[in-house]
Image 1 (cartoon, rainbow, N blue to C red):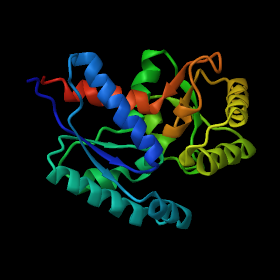
Image 2 (cartoon, rainbow, N blue to C red; image 1 turned 120 degrees about the horizontal axis):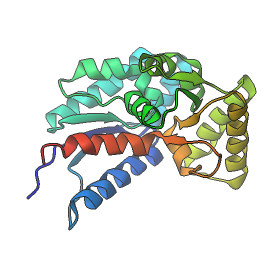
Image 3 (cartoon, helix red, strand yellow; image 1 turned 90 degrees about the vertical axis):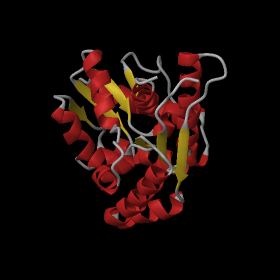
Image 4 (tube, rainbow, N blue to C red; image 1 turned 180 degrees about the horizontal axis):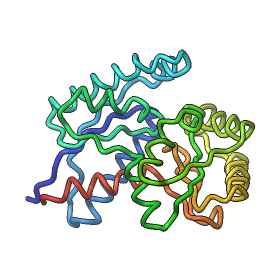
Amino acid sequence: MTATRRIGLIGGMSWESTALYYRLLNEGVRDRLGGHHSADLVLRSVDFAEIVAQQQAGDWAGAGAVLGDAARGLEAAGAEILLICTNTMHKVARDVADASAVPLLHVVDVVATAAQERGVSTVGLLATSYTMEDLFYAERLAMHKINTVVPDQGDRDLVHKIIFDELVQGVFTDESRQAMISVMARLCEKGVGGVVLGCTEIELLLSDGDVDLPLFPTTALHCAAALDLALSQA
């Protein structure tokens, strides 16, 4: 047997994104260890409707309490590493970290490392309006000396609408893909050196080659970094 550290997933926001986390973590273990190996995971999947209502009401304390409770449950289930399976809800990462003794792997730190490795110091950010317009993401990137550029208001509204009206519902259309590519092209005009796909579901719509710039798929990067930790003692 190969020992791995158990990864706790706080998911359900949306379940489409959580399914991607689950698949990438298991594929990663299989590719790294071979044979019939799969990931040692525990998942707490919350009701996204409750979280969406709290987001819309600006009740981030309430949302943080829900995720903090999930973190405690995962700790009780033996989790040794915690992942919040959504970029936006890293706005309450401190609440999650404070709720449990299990170390939280912060997605923004992982993104910053990837940007630094590619020599990118200014990134464009595609995400929900909460992530693009709040400073929690950009400020944490700035701690790593990475500058953040967001789309103009009209493009931010468009990206947010595509995420909530389509992507989290499992709807992926070429029309929306082309719209996202156009938004990225306008970010390129602002001088960014790469684009952060700062919403898990965007990775299901876009891929490398859609623009002539490095893309930073946060879920793939988050999962790879989690596996680095989980397998470091294997």
